[in-house]
Amino acid sequence: MIELKAVDDRPIRQFGLRLFYETNQLTSFEETSQYCADAIYDIFRDVNGESTFALVRIFRLCKTYELPGDNRNRSEQGDQWLALMGTAGDEPAWCDRRRSQSHQLVHVDSGLTGMFKECMHQLNGHVVPIGGRTHVEVGQASMMKYFYVADAMASPAIPDKAQFVEPYNIQSVIAFGSSFLSGSFYLCLCFAKTYLGQDKARDFAMMTPHLSTILAAQDYVGNLWA
Image 1 (tube, one colour):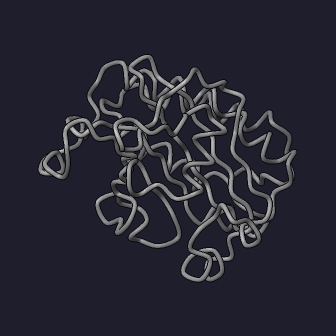
Image 2 (cartoon, rainbow, N blue to C red; image 1 turned 90 degrees about the vertical axis):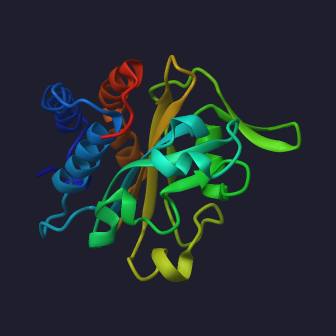
């Protein structure tokens, strides 16, 4: 257990290194993302043993031809999506990407909320208009960048106040990610039930190099789906 508010970045770095070794036998981006989301949700807990996070999600930027099964027919082949690759949370439906009602696939052109746009902007993913449609162009993201909202209820960037933020007591939001050689990138988005100051957000983001390396290896192999 890691009580985020009571530690410095050392156990977080150690946790990231442990993930690196625990995932080296996994064979797909989806399987690895799910393992990492579960591990983050399980290891970070408050003094009472409750998970620090109500929800942990990992997305990857995908083109239509990279989507699984029948989803490939959803739109034009040149379209982009944020595909949910791993998810863990307080509700059973939040622990299986296939049960997600709204975020299993987020269409870049029509589905991006202000939160996703701000996350990508801060992580060097640029939302740009091309041919009358919205696309994401991925820059070389620093592994030390992260997205942070101290007060989720007060922030205009965080949606679903009445359905999610308030009933699940979401206090702070942290996200991090990086780009891949393929031109894609991942985003790990975490919704905390505990207020986290800037220093704790920075400490938490210290796992970014480890998670980025883990997922970059799967992206390079190219086997996305379990």
